Length: 185
Image (tube, rainbow, N blue to C red; front, side, top):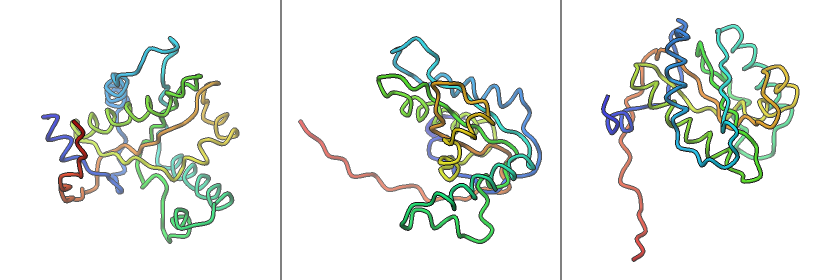
């Protein structure tokens, strides 16, 4: 798939077929994601990928993430999703990928994870899979008990989470207009 076509054609998928994604395909996508350019600051791998598989496990984790968000919600509209009837954190995906960044003194972790996440989404799209960058489980994923349960390595923090699977339909989307550009010469 052409890179420009992938950038303009990829959509966030919020409903998936129940069939699993082959591990070899997931590994290929994560290898692509790992090609994200990262500054060689510490010599430590900049990120670790945690893959969670299985509809039941993801439903269980999604319920835990939703309960955690309800319990720790902050005031304001940004947490209204916790009260939305029928909301599912992982959108019935058969797979979720969590990108954890190495926490160093330079503060590069979140940028490293974001770059890897963009590669992950484009690679999955080019291979006929759907993704959605999900923010709703992030407070739960950063909880120390969740770290232990998922096996997040010491000195790493979850900074990005994605659903991954075969789309059950795809939104058509509307191409975005040219953004405002401020030129300085």
